[in-house]
Image 1: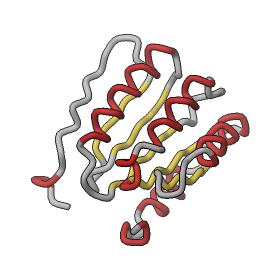
Image 2 (image 1 turned 30 degrees about the vertical axis):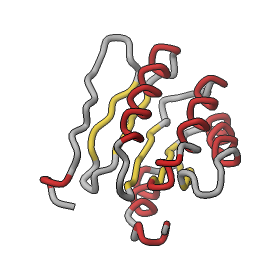
Image 3 (image 1 turned 60 degrees about the horizontal axis):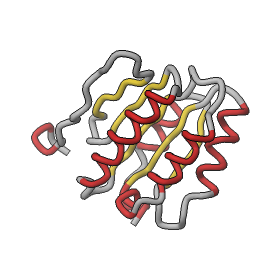
Length: 141
């Protein structure tokens, strides 16, 4: 994908929001979470829903949750909602975790994601997640 084909990010940092996001070279997004406060989750859900509306191609997203100690129920609910959106069929999602509690929360999200929803895998190293994301996207079709 050339730089001209990459969609604008439409993300703006706000005070008290515990995540950042930037475009990946393939057009997907790289999220880094530092907290999962209600304000962070609300902002992330709204941002993600907006991007799902415009989803028209296969993309890869990387979620770095290594700074997160626990995933609240609200986050699990939002993630299940987003991963089951019909537009999520276009998404391969790698999640990098640093502890068992977060791994179990992501496993729960993956188990509640309908077949044909986002393809989700969990890693402990960014390099492993990147290698998985770099596989040809045609494998999803």
